[in-house]
Length: 157
Image 1 (cartoon, helix red, strand yellow):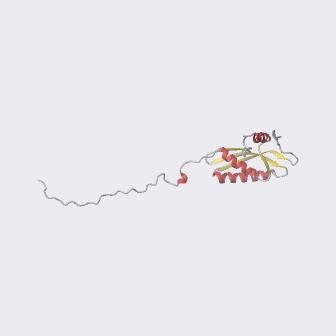
Image 2 (cartoon, one colour):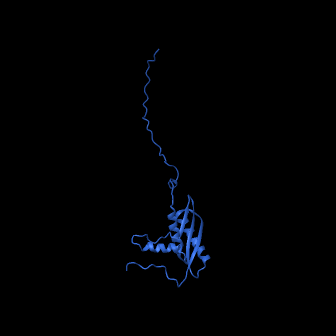
Image 3 (cartoon, one colour):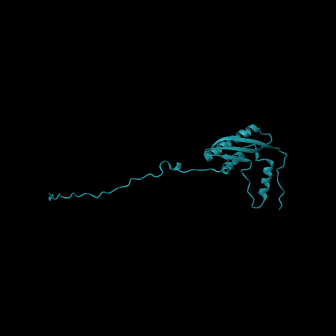
């Protein structure tokens, strides 16, 4: 038996599918990816911060300063090295620093070392976000007032 009665067709509205806005990557955009900081970057920051302390005459040992002075005078040579006397070990979230400084005669070495540590830790942590776990300071020399600077005679005048 066949059903011969026709049912009226119900007019349906076409279905329109809307896409919900999908948030890709999820989370804060600032947390996506990784940032690495080279040892040399931390060394520059620390070197500049240490030089800002009153009582720090120079950075590095006498030999490294002499070689640096020669290198500075060579045409096309490196400019004054802000990393001289600074060594950094940089990890994922922490860094450790070794500094070699020359202090001016008459200043308290303990006070200068404390001020250098404070300045270096503050600058490195503020600029890099790394935790500074230690700042080791070696005082390699004292600059006496009557000592002349270790300047080499220029070849061309």
